[in-house]
Image (cartoon, rainbow, N blue to C red; front, side):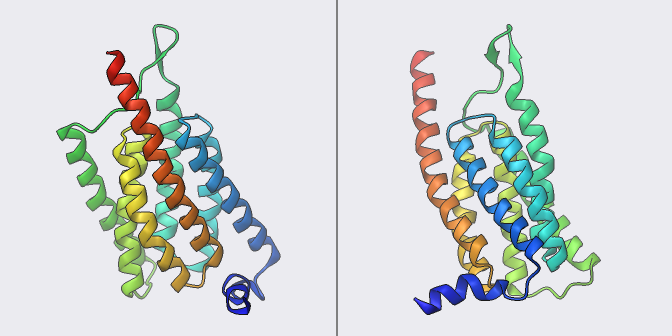
Amino acid sequence: MNQIFDFFIAPYEGRALSLIILETAAFFFGIASVVYAKREDIMVYPTGLVATVLTTYIFFLDGLFGDMMMNFYFSLMSIYGWWNWLRIKGGKEKIVQISTNTSKEKSIGLGMFFLTMLVTYGVYKGFGATIEISNYIDIFTSGVFFTAMWYMANKKIENWVLWIFADIITVPLYAYRGWGMFSLQYLIFTILAIQGYIEWKKSLNKNLQTL
């Protein structure tokens, strides 16, 4: 029990109270965002935007530039997704519906994956940070996460597969870095992403049956 307590509490000893409050807020807003995403609720974006802006600032202060860039991208993509999900046609029907990726969209996603990794690597080098194994993993997951975010903004069901994959990698990565709260958050994200895939799959199948 003491080891578990130390894992979650010890990294925050001596840490500024203001940063602990910000991380706690980001934790709860982040979870709320994924819950809304699972429900296909537009609130995924305002709650997610709060979480990513706070997290961007926290990671900047701690010098985790790959994670910082990932959350900065999330903030920009949240704005795009918010606008895209709200678009309607004929006065009531949503333009963007849950669907699967076309070959073209898969290619765009792959391009985003490599471009995000390249930019994230450049940010590390630009800040003069030493790139270790954990940072390369961070660079890789940044590419996966950003692609997943773009797919979500366009309601592509494959977004959940990418979230699950990258979340599973991120749980031990943050645990290794001593980020107990964020590690727990991504464990919860993994469970919610699995549920999100199931919910969106049901919705997709229902929509296909009505066509």
